[in-house]
Image 1 (cartoon, one colour):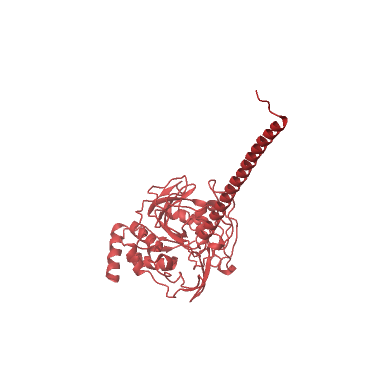
Image 2: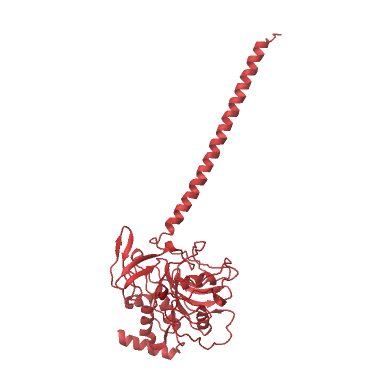
Length: 378
């Protein structure tokens, strides 16, 4: 048998050592590269998500239509569309003499500049982040209609929940920016007056100031307190209209039965619903408090207008302990559930705008009003 020399054994051991060491080094390098790749992917993904979120929240990137849920409301929370998460802490500032705020224990006097902690039915509820909302100034300036400093006589104990049955109307695809006239068409339908949102779109007053855009920012446009701003059919070139022109249009069909309650406290809304009256209210498409970067200001023929392209109007049809229920023109849902606290925050931010009726018209009166309208308009 051939003997192996000590030198040969040492050379063989050295080769094995070098091979083993090389494999270990290669494996270690591979692991480091693999981990670095994962870290880069994670960082890139997070950066991408942050950038996408920032793009979605730019003021001129108007909302996209939420997907239809096809379902009725549920106390589990809002249904019927995509939602952003999170809230912001601050609204744009207004001069004190144009503040739309009041303590909900009493009426808002015209031009009131009160800033108080919200109590009672405006207080946050347990299913929303536990934070005390403060009645901050609304960035939206609308003429205050609710100016009586004396609270009205109570209508009696309110029911625990109300859900009025009102047929829902979808603003899409005909009127991408026509939420306000669509909400009004549902209110009129509830009163027994059949008129389409398209007809109302042709009758609503229009703000005449043409849009001027400089470096991607709108610097001049119309006043939504005077009429609809922009195009109701061109999604990217329209804004909306506020309570005044909507109430005026409603009066063409209902006469003096229209009740513009803009500036009222929230308990007035619950009284309206308990007495069987739906209410057109202004909010935003997300039903939540909007941060300052969702707002922009342009000049109109009547002064500066601070607005958000997330502006939205719905028909308020009910409430419960923790939710309100709306017919939502944006997705055509009937009695869509929205958390009460976030809805109230968004409603206050848009100037507490509310338009309803004084009394529910009997069918005969509704038919007479509709006939009179056809005679006047036709």
